[in-house]
Length: 141
Image 1 (cartoon, rainbow, N blue to C red):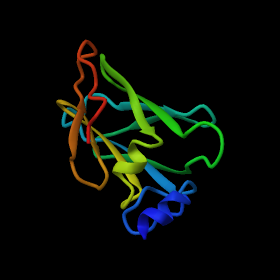
Image 2: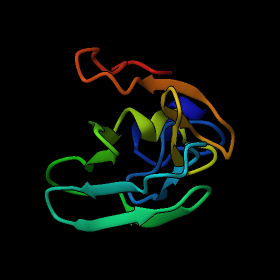
Image 3: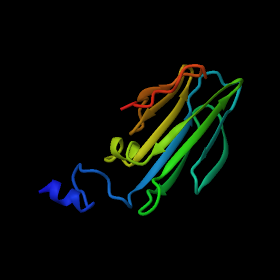
Image 4: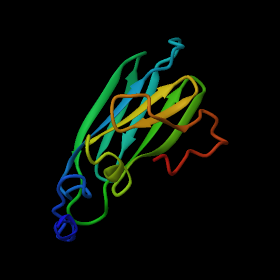
């Protein structure tokens, strides 16, 4: 029965997300060295969330809806801390929407050894190290 419902894009109880789902993108600074702020800049084709300056243990979050028609929702983020920095895909429709379908929350946490991804407020899985010569994990789930 659920496969029939999913074929009509109206999926319930663990099926793929509804096309009009609202998600929350969280970014936080959990780097123990407090000598530098974490600079975060996230944007999509349609929305620029602006540069955010985060102190230790500080978080910002934004709510957005996935697109119903046209191109899929895609946010990228730049994290800069001192002389280190990383750019990565923070939300890609069909990736994070599937991974975080239950919580509807995507967490990106900067810590001493890199940037972690989770669908709940936990440390999660390391997605990027601070070394720009090492590619970020494109399949963190």
